[in-house]
Image (cartoon, rainbow, N blue to C red; front, side, top):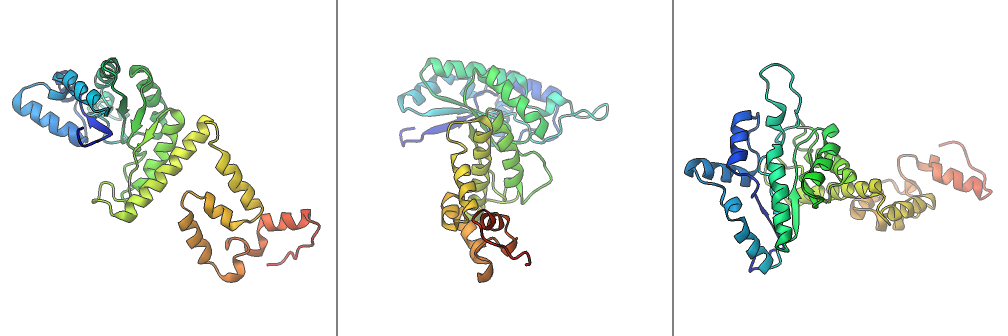
Length: 292
């Protein structure tokens, strides 16, 4: 905090009661949170309460003194998307979901932070079936008193290693539309290795697309403005304006410039059969050669 960190993720919601519920219910993937797993191990090895929960007021005093926002980590977030009991004896639905007890505790911790004038974000799931996301956003907002919700994707399928920036962007768009406030980007290297520079770029761009799609769905003022300008630039076939408006203009330009020179008056997909070009010519009173 003294060095100027703006926010810290602190797993204060996992306490002895939450651990007992976790042990009782059982889970296929156990604990997938790094911080949560370390605290679980420490609590089991020592028999003590989570120190971030036990000494939460002291933590808040530090955060308030240095104007640090707390991201209350969800140590028991789901680590896979399966939430339905298929056969007797299968993993219980509550065992694989983030235990409601932890989320309720995080709601109490949120109020305690606000009472000490500390800003709060609540960390959310990293894996969740597409049809469960909207309900999870509503549940968090109600139990955590409308605190900003920070989701780790979420990934909507578990079988796309190498493409998890896409599975995360799909879930992120739905989450953002449903009320999430902060999307954590996921790279193609997720579950496989540490990301390199290209992985980070791909992950951030995918997350920006998801966030923007969510903003449009929520009807935020000005969210559609760039899209409307892009549509107008496409109508006028103004490539420079399209590149300037694109989320990743550098990549868009590289694709465009890789086309044959004769096709650069329009995209290489349609060439002279470009719908924009044909319609513009007719509306401007010109004739069109209807052959490729």
